[in-house]
Image 1 (tube, one colour):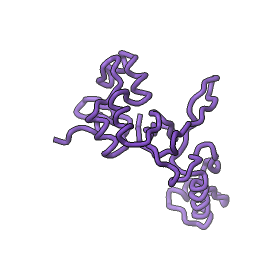
Image 2 (cartoon, helix red, strand yellow):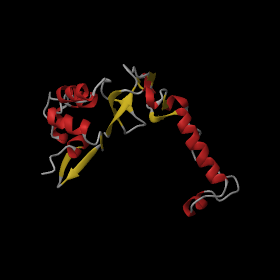
Image 3 (cartoon, one colour):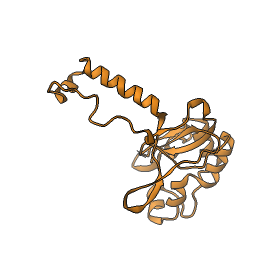
Image 4 (tube, one colour):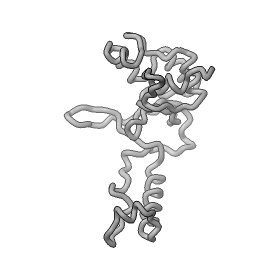
Length: 183
């Protein structure tokens, strides 16, 4: 799964919500405020209403009622409740959904590096318990940590990684791919 480092408020306690089939899980959230999302949505709506559509959009909206999106307006629960200036801590989030935390929040990058080096993220901790998953991803059963070098390269480098990369027929986790030694 894709991962990125997001800034969060001090000691951020992410909301847990009811999911399908009676399960609970973290509330997915985009990395912008609800106010920012509404402003973007309304700007797109105004663009489409004013006739600023591209060719492919005109094909999609053949009648006179042009909607800005096939989706509904933004829902507040899918956006972060804090302002950027309030986000002073570091946390790794998955980016396959809108985003949910896959590490605890940390005050410093050094604390995050230490945690990832020792433990990996929440998904790594589950994946290392399943031998068929560790075979696919090249991991070692029972070992979830990334190691100090890989954790440092991720946190101090891109701070983002795709879900996976296939390189010369070899499957790499996204984190492994973006933190490889370029030499």
